[in-house]
Image (cartoon, rainbow, N blue to C red; front, side, top):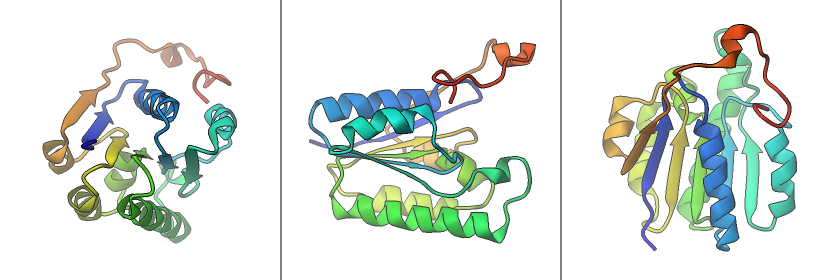
Length: 171
């Protein structure tokens, strides 16, 4: 099976949710899935649910996500880069059919990961590996290299009325 590069970006809700839905679909078909989350520090509800599919779905976090509220420090940058290098190694190994780099665009936008490194991974990935890249601020060069790009656009969000992230829905 030929793998493609998918980008889910934009300021609307649903990028990670779409990627997780694809992970479940892939696991249902017996495909091996790697999910690396760059701007999230669990456990989120999806981590608990995906433990049930541990034979097919591996989930890892790369960093603490603390940089979203301040400039990233050396610890955060080192953790993100180490997570990216591990994801790169695993992608190139061919041990996974689907690799999801969740919030990778946020990590590149904030300088934790070089966009050039992400472009190199896109170019080097084995032909059979599906690569899904999520997050706001997708670099135009990555969008250009992708085979599928979906932009989530916020039209209305209850967060504007003060609704915080809810267990099982947003976290």
